[in-house]
Length: 223
Image 1 (spheres, rainbow, N blue to C red):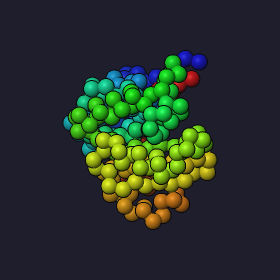
Image 2 (cartoon, rainbow, N blue to C red):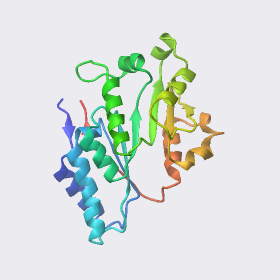
Image 3 (cartoon, helix red, strand yellow):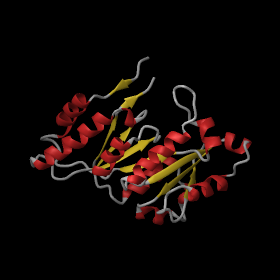
Image 4 (cartoon, rainbow, N blue to C red):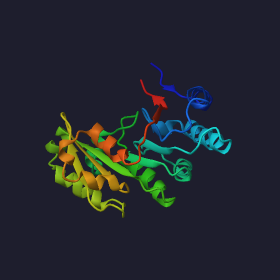
């Protein structure tokens, strides 16, 4: 089945039908997929849609934009777009190159670590430091001798000067880790974090800013 991707035109038509004349604002817009950075033109069109309608007075305020990405396609243009609209970025890295490249490969079957690193560097250059770096601890980590603590410590060695303390949590099938670099809400979760699953953790991180409405748009659906 061929990958289906949301075009800028379809996205803006959908947003117009969904929002204009019905809602005064949207608090959050989350770009996810598949891989949302496959559709940079659509992301930019959505951001400009909100810009334009706030300027026209049809919407009261800009939403907070979030993007969940594997980081491999974040070039200079994408990084500048993320910085321009102050997007909160989540990047997935499963640890050092030797383990990440076993678990995260591109369509040609090649490891993605170097491309992820390049994407993160592009973000850092424009001052758009990722908000969350996340990894999933699997049986493959254990087979290769990596403990959960090894993966946790590895993040400290990455180029994220704003990391103060790593947080971890469990879900039913795997151990996942998220590092929040800027959101003060995570400090409230320190004692109870291990009791939360991944979905709840993400929801609680954003809860401090959330009021009523959250719009999510899936930009790329892979086969």
